Image 1 (cartoon, rainbow, N blue to C red):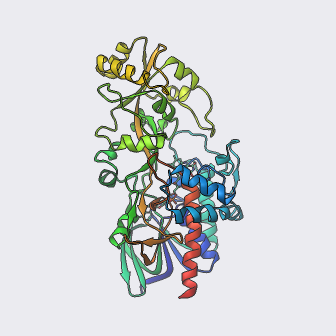
Image 2: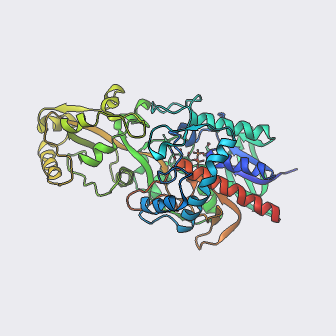
Image 3: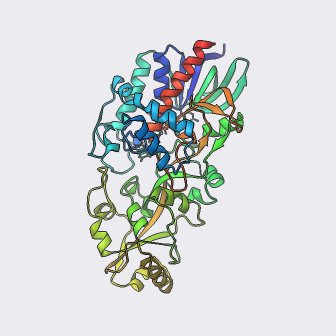
Length: 454
Ligand SMILES: Cc1cc2nc3c(=O)[nH]c(=O)nc-3n(C[C@H](O)[C@H](O)[C@H](O)COP(=O)(O)OP(=O)(O)OC[C@H]3O[C@@H](n4cnc5c(N)ncnc54)[C@H](O)[C@@H]3O)c2cc1C
């Protein structure tokens, strides 16, 4: 006999597990399908920095402050209905997570760091560290779900979504073969398409797949693919969230996710492989990541700066994260120096004349940090993509919408697989964990409401 549940959750990450736990609490039968076999899954949540914020404000900040900040960060591009509900419902997530036994503490004095998953991640290499806060939090949610009798299949990749007589049928692959489950509702929470170079090429830029994947490998866009085939609309697909990291990160896991070189790329002279100046026209490094990801040669950039900027940058980051000076050198990242610009050009294989013109052009920009005080330095950089900002269109109740904005009965989405939240011309990022937990919480309530009515 075919398996049947009230709800199937695709993806046991933060959004998926908050929703699954809430559904359990509200008496709804749920099956979680999780691609990874690891305890806690292997989405971005487990390797994240663990700062839970809403547009850089604590989730328990006043509604009006969060709402204003969401609009400001995204230059007004956030969907107003999603902004309202995110600002309002995020107030529930800290008490709810605390009730689940998840420990959060202030990491620094920054408001965005007030509720950080504890023990804190230090900013070391990509390694999954099961003893640190983000992984501990996910293990806690898995344990709570199982202890309350929840059904989860790990090592299960959802690969089909079809309409069925009274809802949907989800097909999934396991090592044991293909299986399926029918459900009135399906929540897609598979974390985005940053690990799918074909989708990056299609939606972000022809060579965006050449960027560094500053994320786990599970975000292959399966959910978005299934939802679009089922008639869902999509929004904001051309933008990504990420940081500029050493190009050495392409071959060494020690160089990502930190230290990043955002500050250098924003203030100093960013040059192409040939040595020409690349004009930085966005207000934030996140916006710059998308711009570089859209170029023909995302791996061809170097940032050129002088001794003054390098020395000034040798201080702890505001969010308690490692900084390039000294971590870039300590971890073996590319960095060359010379007492002359011609010498530096030779070090990076650029044309000395073009590099000299680039530096003159850069130094003529009033607000830039002039490259003037030798020795001069160059570091090869690459845009590192953490997650895709765009995704499935959803409404304020997490229901999936078709391209005309009409809800598709029984389909829901939450977390980084959705669009309409982050974005804007300057790469407005409003916090991945806060969005995932809040929309997971909303989706759980919304699906339970529908189950109660049917
Ligand atoms: C290095 C790094 C640092 C970060 N730091 C922060 C931070 O400090 N604060 C912050 O707010 N955000 C941070 N983020 C972003 C944040 O981690 C994400 O936005 C958030 O975790 C997304 O949650 P999610 O539940 O949508 O997806 P995920 O946590 O990625 O979960 C998705 C799950 O779906 C599973 N899955 C995928 N495809 C399938 C399929 N076909 N079938 C079944 N399962 C599937 C995956 O295995 C995964 O477990 C960081 C991210 C990274 C990579």
